[in-house]
Structures are given as C-alpha cells and as structure tokens.
Length: 273
Image 1 (cartoon, rainbow, N blue to C red):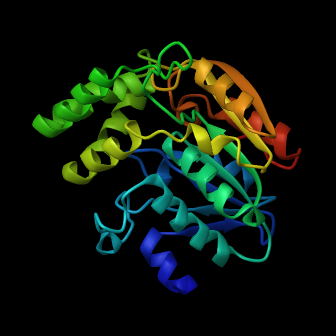
Image 2: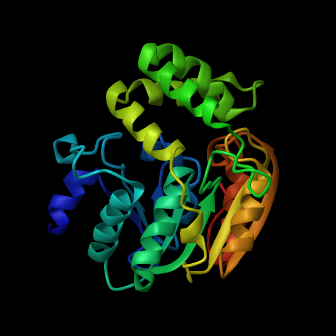
C-alpha cells in the first residue's frame, strides 16, 4: 500500500521535524490522542508520527477482518508497513502496553527499521505460570474479564478504567480512559482483549537486538513491576526504569516523568512541557 493509503488506513499524523522519526503507538481501547501530553515534547527535534491501531480511533475499519488479524504478529506487520513508508531512517518506537509488545514483535521481524524501542508498561504474558513467572493474573481472572466485556461492556468499561489508570484522586483520568473504551466497538474490543490477555510472547524477547528502554510504574495492577524486571532480564540490550508512580498509563498520569526518561535515553533534545 502506498503512503497515502496508509495515512487513511491508520489515521497517521506527522508533526515536527523532518528527520529522526519517533513513532507513538497506543494501548488497548485507546487511540493516538492519549499521547497529547508527551508527543509534543519531541516535535522540535523529531519527526513525530502518531497513528491508530486497526480497529481503534479513526483507523479505517474496513481494513479489519478476523481472518487478517489473528495474533499480535499481524499488528506488528502493520507497523512494519508503516515504518517502511516513513523514510530512510530507522525509527524510535514508543509503545504503551500491548503496543509495546507489538513493537517488540516488529523489531524482531525487521531490526533494520528500528533505532530503539521505548516500552511503557509492557507485558509479554499476563497470566501467572507456576513459580517461574508472575504476570499478575490467573487464567480465571482473564476468563472473568472477557465474560464481563461480553455481558455488559459499558459496565466493564466503567469498572476496568479506574483499575488500569490508578490515581483515584484524579478521576478525570479514568473518565478519559473509560470514554475511549466506550468509543471502541464492543465485539472488536472483546476480540482484541482476548488476543492480548491470552497471549504469550515471552519467547520473543530474547530475539530482539534493538536497544530498548522499559518504563515501569512501581504500582501497576496490569503489569506488575516484576514483569518489567523479567523483560529487562530476557532482552539482549534493555534498560529498565521504574517510576515512583501508580497506574498503567504514566504517559497520561505522569507525562513529565515519561518525557524525562525518554529524553534521558534518546538524548537531550526533547523539551519538557
């Protein structure tokens, strides 16, 4: 697909400088607007690219089919296609939650397209696996989550958003996330959640050679901090930063901290806002 077609398909927006591309990828149930407090800090020094995962936000949903999108690897293929069209330079990929793992898979497929990865709240496996791996959930928890989405999606969104966001003293943040959940087609949201929460991408971590920064909150119910430590230990070239912060969305709740850590990793060119 040509560049113009990709812009429409994934609602791609390009801001800022003409070089050193930095691509921001949102998490489940979200869209590119969730980066509004982080991405602008980099427009003076980087070519900033925002897009919506297929099925979310303003993506062209006629491009979605259940046959085409079977695993997160298919979403990684989408990003490889986007990165190929961005230009001649490898990109800095900034991915939140499930998109962090999509970035890992894309970098595994095409390491030549990536300069570095910034992984915010990643989890390669949400379900606990004996004594060797603690992902934060039992299989019965995931079954209950999917059942709740199926039986009462709006009620699920109202209950799940505060758990994801944390920071109960700032209810407006949970409200923003809940509203984003509610804009997503319930049947698609259930499908994507099952793909995400039942997945197991632990074996992919060691195959990624791209330098990577892992940003992990100290109190995260969705991706506990030991998950970040596990990923850092499994990847070949990873740096782990643990923020003294609660919740799974620090780019929304603690954007200044996230900007600082990205800037420390990629260089001093970003501007704190």
